[in-house]
Amino acid sequence: MEENKTAALRAQAVQDALVWGVQQPEMTGLFSVFSIRRLEALLGTFLSKRLDVSPGSFDPGKLVEVISPAILRFLLDDATVSVHTELHEAQASHMLLDDAGDKLAAQVGELLSRLEAAETLLKRMIPPGGSVPLPGPTGKHEIERGEERPHAGSTPGIA
Image (tube, one colour):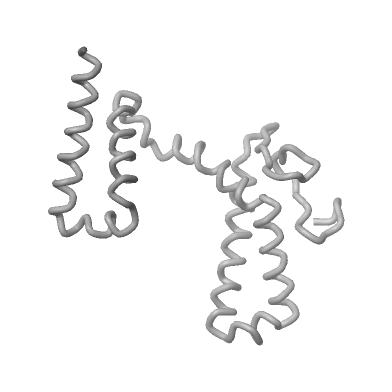
């Protein structure tokens, strides 16, 4: 019986939060990105996990430890590497400039530079002797600190 009452109170709290949010002009962006049903689910999850959060949960050092490996796995994913390589090749052959024009080609060049800088920085953050699991069918299951992963279309051993 107590469990039913708790669930009903939680559902009412979520509904009250959504009603309040709809009335706030600064929240319109949130409602344009998420459906009411999705927001309802997210609020319910946040409410049920509230006791799992502590002030240390938002410590930048802890967040970096959690987020950095996920970003590095994304950057090293076979599909990401393939697109990255394709854009580099298009840039080198001037096809990117011909196809995209000056402005977009410059933006893609900047994006490629920033992705490479992020990958280099994140690889340095792997602790000595540590590794990060890699996604996809690469034949390898992790990358170790300082190790280069062959890019799509390149010969293994030549980075």
